[in-house]
Image 1 (cartoon, rainbow, N blue to C red):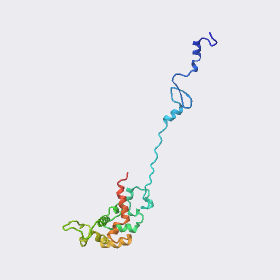
Image 2: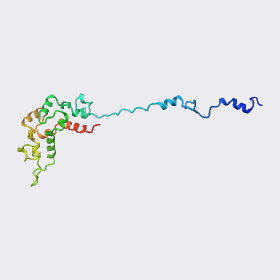
Image 3: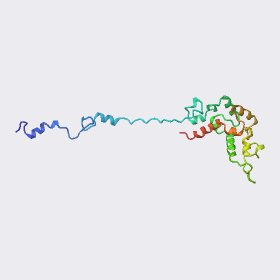
Amino acid sequence: SSYFGSSHSASRRFAWQLPPRNFSRSPLGRVTFGRRSAPCQRAAMAEPPAKKARTCRMNINELVDVEWEKKKLSEIADAPTTALQGIAERGATVLAKFRPGAKTVRDLGRWKYYKMAKAITGFSEFEKAGKRKDGATLNIDKAVDKEHEHKSLEEIAELPPSALEGLAKTADAPLKEVFGVKTIRDLANLKYARWAEWITDLAECES
């Protein structure tokens, strides 16, 4: 026998010093026995990172009063016309008195007198003076007073707003005084009505 005894007993004697077959080493050099090390367990149990909030730069701050700058388009559309920058209580009162009146931004964006004025003015740019064909039936008789039915689109665009069917002559003075609207063309280009129209149209595209 050797100093350590038989080879068989030596292997038994040092068997406790050998790691078991299913051992593994962690990234930190630790020996694990059949289960994950603490760092690995923490990594497996960690919550997935939270999604970052979407950053949006869109705004219409130059069109609306400060109190409406954080609102959705649909909320602004349902707001009184004073939500638009430049329309004070006096202007809102004038717009609300018409029949139909425009009490909200949505009302103004869909206001029939603005819509008719815009269409007439737009069409006038495509009119050829003195070139109406014999027998042509095109007309806008229900949009203007009877006395103006025979006139060209260009002529109608230069008439006062009261030339539109349903708008009384008493409407001309306040429209001119408060909004600077003297003609149907001016009404078609009224910036507040245009802003209101944009807001109302795009409110339908909002999530």
